[in-house]
Length: 90
Image 1 (cartoon, helix red, strand yellow):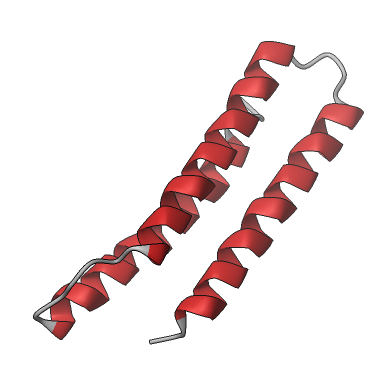
Image 2 (tube, helix red, strand yellow):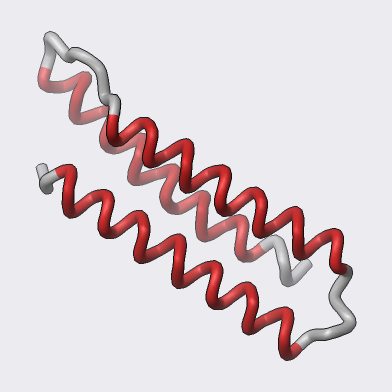
């Protein structure tokens, strides 16, 4: 398993790149609804904060398989962060 420090860096990198991409998308598509854009940004930041909180406080695991499953779920949620960006195209 990768270190928690690396996982946090990856999460922040993905989140900031997606936010940058969202603002660039809005710049080149001025006809996009402001409300839709604001909602997508809020969802990205909220999801990033929730994932970061779960990384920081993983809890106690008696079984290594449960710990592995916890961090696998975090990786899956990082993919859903990318899907929030895809909602801007629709």
